[in-house]
Amino acid sequence: MQLYKIKSPWPRRLLTAVLAYLSTLSLARIISLNGEGTVYFGGNYFGYNLTAILLFAVTAWLLNRFFTRKDRRLKVVSSIGGILLGMAIVYGGYAHYANDIFRSVSETVFQFFLIMGISACTTPVCAELFQLPGRIQSWYAARWEKQPAGRFYLFMASHRYCYFLLMWGILMLSYIPVFLSQWPGNFVFDAKYQLREVCNNIYKTHHPLLHTLLMGKAYQLGLKAGNVSAGYQLYTLLQMLILTSAFAYLLLYFYKKGVPRCIRVGTLLWFALFPMHPAFAISATKDVLCAAFFLYYAIFLFRLLVDGEQFTWPGYAGMILTGVLLGLMRNNAVYAIAASGIIVLLYLKPLKSKVTFLITLAAVLLLHSLCNRGLILYTHAYNSDSQREMMCVPLQCLARVASYRRAELDPALYEEICMYIQEGDIPGYNPYLADSVKNNANEHLLRSNKLNFFKLWMKVGLQFPDEYLESIITNTLGYWYPLNQGVYVSADIAFYHTLIDTEHEIVKHDYFPLATKYYNYLFYHINYRNIPILGYLFRNAPYVWLVVLTLLWSILQKRRSLLIWGMLPLLYLGTCFLGPMAALRYIYCLIVCTPLLLHGLTHPDKSVSEKCSPPDVMPNE
Image (cartoon, rainbow, N blue to C red):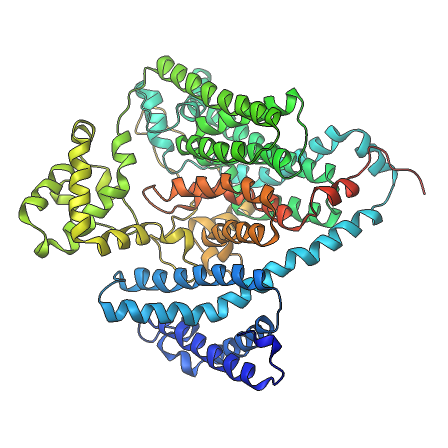
């Protein structure tokens, strides 16, 4: 029934009120899972909370606008986005607070109605969000005509490398205070294990060898000079230079495309002042350099697909170089490059373009393989536990069944599970983190008996499919659950220092106490969670949903080039879903692409953007 064609407004108003109330009740049910007497959105006392009235009023207003729209395509795509968000809220709430989603048939049916109720709110929200880019695009196109033609602009238009250097310098200077406060760097996560390999001269392929060698060379230079801390600072500075250069390159790209000045300034401030970026810039984790090269590669791919730019050999060379370095920093990035590359090949129309991109993609994969093999030969590294890493999702599924359904599990199947997973690790099964299961898994048996392992996994899964599904949901919860979350759902950004357990330790010094006080408050004490808006931006979910909604908008607007480009971040995210947990640093490469993603949403199509692109030299008025 097309409600906008009904002359009387009362049927629409009645349906709007009913759906808005059901949406409020549905959200109240999900929030009540948080526990008795909680303050978060009222908890079980949602009915007494003014927030419920506000939510009802806003939902009713949005639904009324949605029903009066005439664009059927908008309604369909918005409904898909709204239902996906509804499923994320309902299943995420049950997984996080009850850790039991499919407890009974009646509960599963009830969850379906909860999803429909919450979708009554999320669907019109998606419709409103999908309307925003169209409004911004007209502003985008008109804004360039108002750009001034002063001397500074004319100089920058003729010497664009100076613009890049200026942005690069500003970003580096903005990160110096946190670097001095945590000198010689934030020694966190896997850094101590990687440097221990350097000290013992026993390398493993578990971590990217190029990243290990970069840290190791800086450490060894310091060792020769008699101060390993001073040597290690070279790695931190190098990492800062590479990351900020990627940000500066994005700003240069925006400048060349005629992006309005206020957006370029906003992007610069977001990279310079948003605390996540300087915190990651000085943190010893492979994810930072991976993010830098991911952004470089994404810009090249964006120029090729969305802008339709005809590359010369420097463009293809840059794409190959950044693709190879991206793969050397994270192994799962190679799979995203290869899979998205196949989709790009199917999309490209002229045969010449297909052949050229095919050569580029083949060069990336071949050079990555050769470089990786060369690093293995150089370091004599051995493959320590790749099977445990690759099988962490099946291992987590089996551990959940063995832990929660032990009484119903056949004793022979339980004993077979314990052949792969140590029996002592099963009681410590963590729904959000696979490390406690896969770290001590039987690597040798997984290698030599892989077929039987998959047979076991399938056999147990046919008996307990609900536990398998819940295992995957809880393990990836931190990526897509948009409401409240706990400690294990998404690992925090942290400021701390771990020791290598060797004679020559890296020692931290505080050379900027004012910055230390600020950043320690945010990260060492993890208080950024408590800051409204800012705390939410330190989570995975907003960036993951931005990718999903961008792809849906591309379908709505038939922007196939943007949709194909979006396969790169989407497929990379898919590889992260196969990882041991939903850590924020795993998708930092998607976070740094946020301005580029928003640019893809808001900038006009190729024909309009070409008219709006700045000339090399603007005439004087």
